[in-house]
Image (cartoon, rainbow, N blue to C red; front, side, top):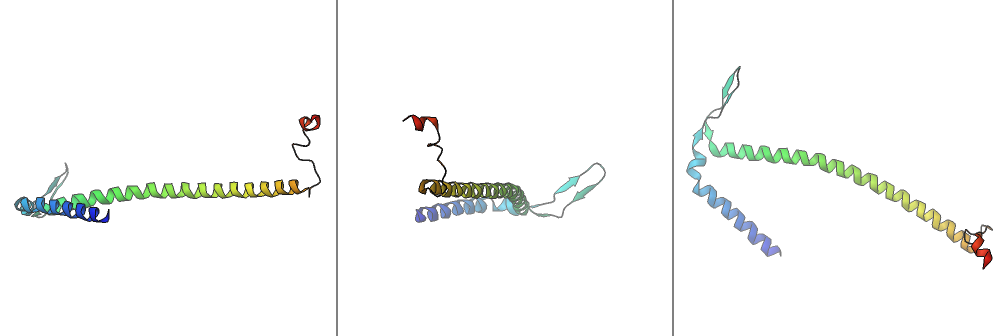
Length: 123
């Protein structure tokens, strides 16, 4: 399985390298990006088109990463809450089991719920 992952990774990187090599002329062509607002305009200096593409992919990656952090933090808080609730339930179960063990050994001196029911007396 590990070898298959390595082979697929190398094939993917080779394919990306081939695409870059075949489009090298376009990616290295200088382009001046300009923003035109109604009140003002700004023209960025000429840089190769590939840098604009790298910038856009990086910006998209960062936006998705930051949005996923919010989701992870919410999930972690929910997980902590559920863990605490689970611990409370486990403590309650342990206390009830201790109480049941005490009733079974006769330490409390009280009738159990089954013994005090009217059906138990009829039998």
